[in-house]
Amino acid sequence: MAYATQMDAAKQGIITKEMEVVAKKEFKTPEEIRELVACGTVCIPANINHKSLSPEGIGSGLKTKINVNLGISGDCKDYTMEMNKVKMAIDYGAEAIMDLSNYGKTNTFRKELIDYSPAMIGTVPMYDAIGYLEKDLMNITAKDFLKVVEAHAKEGVDFMTIHAGINRRTAQIFKESGGRLTNIVSRGGSLIFAWMEMTGNENPFFEYYDDVLDILRTYDCTISLGDALRPGCIDDATDAGQISELIELGYLTERAWAKDVQVMVEGPGHMAMDEIAANMKMQKRLCHNAPFYVLGPLVTDIFPGYDHITSAIGGAIAAANGADFLCYVTPAEHLRLPDVDDVKEGIIASKIAAHAADIAKKIPHARDLDNEMAKARHKLDWERMFEVAVDGEKARRYFESVPPKDRHSCSMCGKMCAVRTTNMILDGKKVEFCKEDGSCE
Image (cartoon, rainbow, N blue to C red; front, side, top):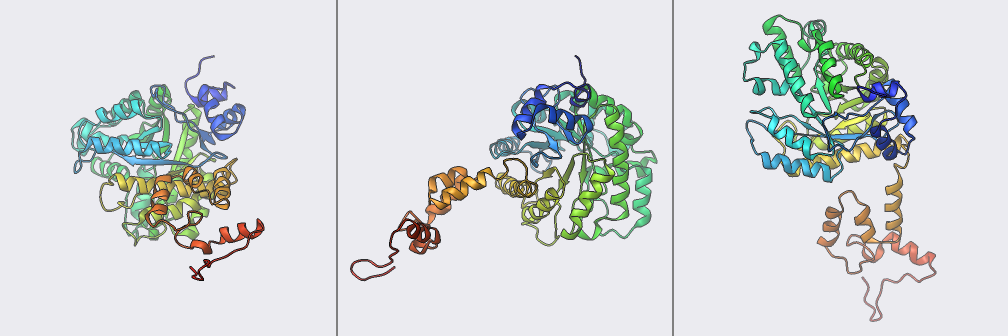
């Protein structure tokens, strides 16, 4: 039987090879995955032209996935460094990479990325429109925007952020409600808003939404409904602009599903911890339990240089309360383009958040490696600890930087190691700290 997209196949009762791969990764049956894809609560972003892809599922009941942002910038045109970031992201287990390049003819880098990467690839066509078309913003037509969407889809992009929810109605609510400290902080959202204000036209991604969906359906590219009005500081969270756009995104979700296009919905942003759980529940309710993709949320605004930590705190809370996909944040957020070390720090922080949430959500086998680490620590088996650790190289480097006199413990506790002491007592051994000459450590 023929099918156009993963959702189309799922609705017809067809189990695709991608569903089988995801089922194995998630310890579920292929039929369980098919049912979840058919109703839209899980998506499998898998463009028909992304041949190197190792498919992943995003959504309810599955492991929390993470995304790594990178790309070529006009202020930092280092293609080699960006590919090094790609390789690091894959080595550390990132399930998705978003190419946010906004300089020059970006398709050369994007094609290389798609050819190389087993991780899902996402883009924001709006970022690319100005450089790709070589036009000023005001001179870009609705047809031009669709042309960029089609180019990305044809190249093999698995999911695209499309800012279709900031239409004339929600933009008016944003302007009339006022009071925001940071206004619009979404780069794509701000460009769409500016284009609408300068031309007086409706958002082309909203006005020609059916045409966008037709393009995405042709290549089985998942739509990630962008949150142009997400809060850019904790004071702007859960305001009229954010919520009015979220309502629109729920409406757009159903329209996409009607055309068998898979959907993710994007969310905040910056948000105080006590608001996160309610926002996750609100999104799932208004957007019909579609997979939810969050940037952070960053739980405080005063720690530039440490926003991978503020994001990991919010991300863990968000994912534990229903978010399915976390966009990493690096220490360079708000400051500069991240370098390779920043990318590593951001990935690890996001992986911590995702894994902690999976444990809280009781995702099947989420605790397995934690239990392996506990067993290794009980045995003081350092080699096994380094093997189980997500970043075993760093763990080993720290352990060996101040070598312990007795390798059975670390240099912090020495022979007073609680694990060593308890093991010796339970093994019927005498615990001693002094040597035969009377000297004690």
